[in-house]
Length: 584
Image (spheres, rainbow, N blue to C red):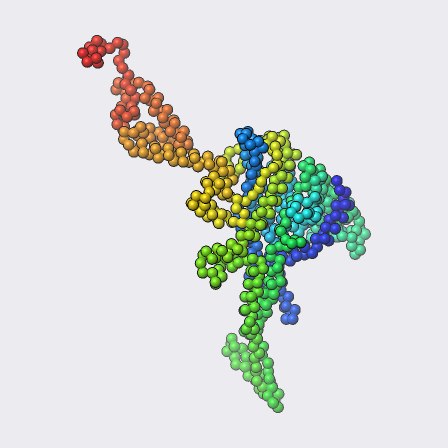
């Protein structure tokens, strides 16, 4: 377990090393947030940008396409051919899907996709949640993440430091005894904030607060105190690092997809601002009083066009200086916009437009596919690899903290129904599994269309289509539901055909009883049919005296089973009746 001083020193070293990369991230963040100011020093004027922010448009569109489909975890059976092993494998998958559902994984992937594309990193911290007894995914900002160096292709650092900023009131409220009269607070005011360090490794999780900077301008009492204090230290029972930091694939240093558009955007915004200034001066031109030879010019009356007042000048002429934008300004603006779109892979279709040289829908799809699909595919495969390691950490947390405890979970009705009960150490026999997108590189719309086309031409089975469909997380359960719905539809069709026949088994009273069970009692159709059949059998088996209402057919036709049988006379029948039955 690292000491307090080692962690603080490690944080400062990594902060210095990450300075250039984080500086680029901040520039991208400022542009995405619209905090960019265009300096116009030669005109002594600063103007806010008023051109289309293509970075935000491309970032939102690409991120939503990457996260429009969810990957699926697949846990193979430990022992092939064993029904018990298959059952446990299915339980592991359902348990993992319950983790994802409880963490609202799709919403978090939307957030992480923006981090990956804009900052080239998408860190996440998985920790035990003792309120829900489940692993909790916490998305962290790459600007506040300082991970240990990793080899190419690795996503799990040996240790990681996450930072955050808190107020003095927060520290005093939650850690008053530790920080009061101990931490160097400096000059405290309403805006004073202090840095928290969360150090995460395979051995421990430690929380450290850094005091104010040692400034010679502060009073002696304000400079007193420790520069850092350890607030919490918790051992890590899993023995695994709990941070995962997937990175965008680049050459030798982190680089976001839109880093190259910053300079072009500044140039385009500055040129647009200068153009507007020139247009404004053209509307309100500068006027100069020019003297005639040998005369002393004098303005007798100032002109006011709005009031209809004519200006009067003596001994000179008024000349206007018109300032118009250059004739190539519009061409330059369009060229810069095109370069931004090419550099950041931001096609016009992202804004609901189409290039002028696109004549057919098929050509438009081909251009958009060449621009977007491979980038979406790479990002989705990066997330699939990251989720695989995140799932293994979640399984380790489950076994280390609640392994022998009986738990239950629910999955949303779109994925499954009912409640599942399990014991972690029995279910998680292994953490070996796969995480993959059904069709990496496709968004949800193109994926569904592609599945339908393959089914139509017979290249894919329905079972494979169910496994590839992102809306179907449990293909086996969906298969059972399809069969149940088909049989139910056949049963309903059979009832309708028999009820339409007056000589069929469904007489008015039985049919009314069946409808009552389904509509009023809200019973399943198969239960209602079974109860209606039992009621008819009981009626037909019970003999009633002649003339009683039960022996009458009522609305039904006689002899169709709607009436109860008539009970025979008591005692032995007379000899004449027996001879008559024998035909004597």
